[in-house]
Image (tube, rainbow, N blue to C red; front, side, top):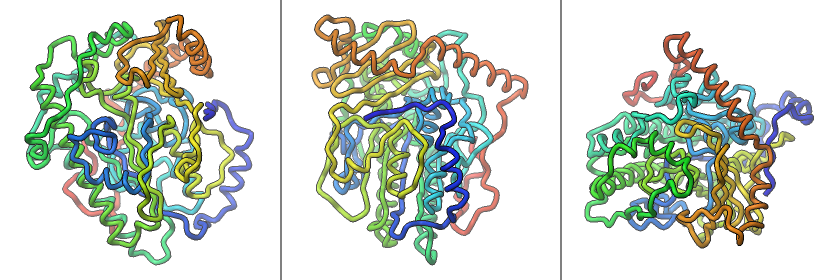
Length: 519
């Protein structure tokens, strides 16, 4: 799998512009499938049943997996909400679009999945979490059915000049204080609203005469921390043997850079008891089960409306969650529980035998995959590769590799990860690398970097991961970018107000008790 990072203006752009200007908006090919794209937030694949978690009550994800394809080794472009989502929508690595952290602007000039689908004749709509930073709050979507639960300004910009800092809001202390059961929460209210708007949009599409093919994104914010849900979903796990993280020793033996995340998440301030860890995992699983229940309702509605046979369904997450593995919580790390994501795809045509693909893939691959599904034409290079050949039974590529990058809060240096075959290689600017053999050591307990027997493997991985990467230059760029945003925020006395407002509800937009913006 060859991945290209494009930093300039492509020579192919004029031809693409000409096609876009001359093609009718409704020039869809007959028989194009609808696309239902379902996202959850902060789901590690290791805590849902299709990926082997026996404790997880996720029957609807299991159903989707039975009828579709499971990508066993799918990764996010960055283990943080904004850069991961911006990269996924644009098909570009975070460093290619300077989307470093949760306060990074998603630039309006970038082609995105909805823009490309529109050129193929699709109607594009999104309900739920977008986490677009900046004044462009559509990025090609024809319809945005809800506001966002997170702010659209620069308020989440980190400051690497301060060194490692404690983040009270996403600390383990905040996580432990919030454990349920809860009668109701902001996340539950937002996700219920997003679900209802998405469901109504499917119904409106089914009722329309000669509708354009629809690409509908339904994006939940759960199971993002804080971990809490209602008694109904917590009770699903009464008496369940919830898997506990193993003790692999001090994570800093792998690299001293993990000290930064220990400080950031407040893990140096207290030691969690087994009871606290079990309860946090129970709440997290309960939140996942809530999302799973709504996925089941969406799948059932596709069946009831007669849309299932001509609708591709895709489920994924923006990043994972450490869940106490290696003593770590939240995301931000390039280790498996944080960087891996679930990816399940059901193509139109009904049930099929179970299929599992082990080749490493990335959510960067979704843009060219959707492009292929729609038969859209583009000459623009992207950093992903279409998954459609694999989904249709093509041979896996034993030399496939994927890249994941991190330049957000928690770290104070640019970081990059390469997964290639059975090996994983992590580099941090100014520090020694980490090398793992995931076949022999899936839990990443032994750093093999520097060992003589792995010299050839490491040399090859170092060569691959270094393409297009300049750690010192990226650090300078990231700090300059942070300081510019922090200056704007200080001059404005608060973050710029770009939050999306649903101005004129259409016939499929119903009041779910959520006001214009959720803060």
